[in-house]
Image (cartoon, rainbow, N blue to C red; front, top):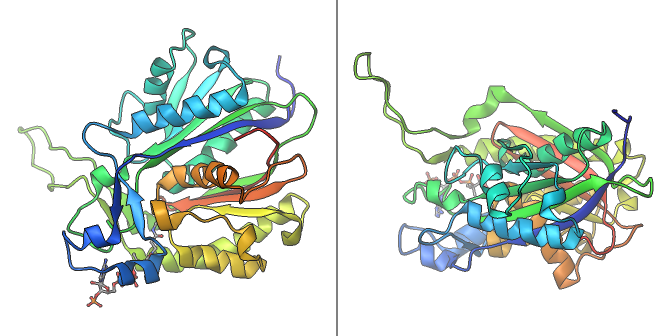
Length: 338
Ligand code: COA
């Protein structure tokens, strides 16, 4: 039986980062750049990168275990796994299927990946919310994980400085107390400007037909156009999401944005007239970890004490990236979620 609008509870959030640190100074060994150039334009000082055989599945599995531990939900109680990934080590099996297997889940619950780049967590939340609201599924694990560094052109100094690797995970469940932790949520896409950020799959045509153009498997980005587009659309969009939740900007406790560029974050901060304490950033240490950046910033913020949890605490989560896609949610941050 399908119940209408079962409310959603955010039950657990976790994250995982590779150990290997590559600083801006390290990057000067591979191309002509400087710490000053990178830091002043992006706010990034260093990033964590996968090394050896380590990959986004390992990171995603680790983040998933942490989020599940916080949620108190056993992996075998899950009804669905969604992995938000745009730079996975394999296109298939889906990362979500790998995570299902590594968690030792004995039931054949569905597991799939969605590609919404750096908006992946918000897209995953919107999909999961639909399943929970409708009563189709109760317990859903979202894993946002990418090994971006493996798909960088490490001679392209304007793109490869930005990205780092990492994973975040979130467990959503049906709320038992009637309170919905997703106060408002929205996702958007504009495919007509998809060429701003793209990554081709490498392949070739059948030898019996005309050959296709050779492609590399690298991430390509028109940083200037991305910057201009995001700075224009994001601040008013976030105001709309706050309004949709029936709140005013000053009512929300934290802005936990996608960590792509500190100047983009500051543009939103200025529009909302938020103090630095309300804006959670860790881009300095991790760069852009795509869909993982929001859950990493949230869970690390709680660990560091910069984010306080409680039934009355709320945050704006927002993402934007290839597609172009973007999305935002106003969420309640209950005690014990991370
Ligand atoms: N070190 C030193 N110089 C660099 C450099 C680097 N790492 N990268 C680029 N440059 C140089 C360029 O070669 C260019 O030199 P030229 O004028 O002699 O040709 C100059 O700096 C300006 O390059 P440009 O690419 O126009 O820089 P920019 O001011 O747009 O900054 C980004 C580049 C990538 C930092 C910036 O566009 C950005 O952050 N955009 C947003 C990207 C983003 O958020 N993407 C993720 C979305 S999820």
